[in-house]
Amino acid sequence: MVTTTIEDLHADVLGCALRRLDGRSLAAASCATAALRALATDPDTWRALCLAEWPSLALPPAQQLAALPPQRLFADAHPFPSADADTECGLLRLPVPAGELLVSAVDVYYRGAPLLSRVVETPASSSWFLASPFRVEAVERKKPPPAAAAAPSPAELELSWVVVDPARGRAVNVSSRRPVAVDRHWYTGETLARFAVVLGGCKFEATVACSEGAAGGHAISEITLAVEDADGAAVSGEGTLRLLAAAMEAPRKGGEREPEEAKRRYLEFVKRKKGRKESKARREALVDLCCSAASAVVVLTCLAAVALR
Image 1 (cartoon, rainbow, N blue to C red):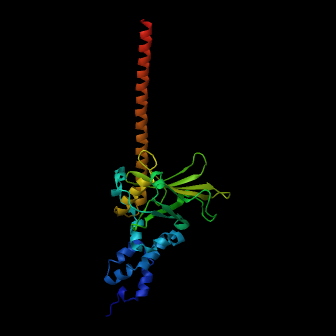
Image 2: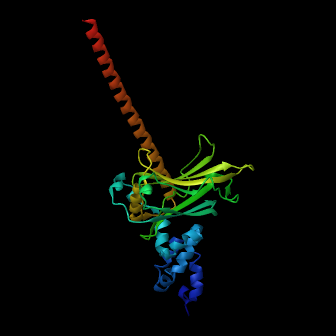
Image 3: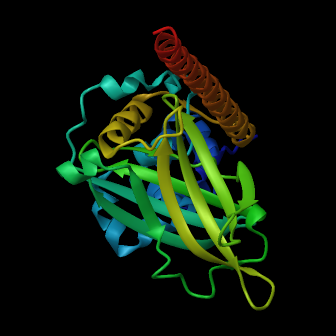
């Protein structure tokens, strides 16, 4: 009796089948046999997988990333940064990584379907960038996206924000994929969908601002990324480069529960920040009370000295 194995199929047929797999399944297939490993490690297969996962990589500004190994890019950007990278902001004391450019590949999805894609290049070597608060705008209010980028419900949006360092050939995804919080702006009334990960004791928060349209839906008006430390202060470009370098080198962690884990860590960060603010307010109130008491003692002493003359 003749037995037939999957390796008896033509290589082109196997390659076409492998391109329909997700990243985890493709990596598992490469561990099965030597023949499947040769097909599963084909750069074109991984490049097609990256383009399917992040449509922004097909945009002209991202063409400079074509030199990066697609398998390495997927392994860096698809899983979440491990919690082992979440130490303290002592990472800010590390040397500043040498790099002249950061590339952000931003993709917004609605119910799993691509909705909006942007690529942003950020010069990262100037003294202005290193000293200023880190902030990247993928969609500016002055240049809103087309009406096609409208979402009926901001809470159902998903966001991927991949930061790539072309000089080092490494990347990291600094988005929680699903919103960790959805609220309204106190002044503009816009709905804000927040996507955040906590790395190195600091919070990377991407915010998608949606304004209400005439038909009752929501239109994306702004997409930004900023970084805050444990006290709520903005982290500079220099500090952000150190945090990104540590996150890119840290282990990765995958799994379906990672978005929920990112939300839990975000809520813990917000709770700790609120506690630190309350503690600081109590200390300042105590200092004010001591100063007021000292001033009262001085005034009473002066009045007593005048009265006893």
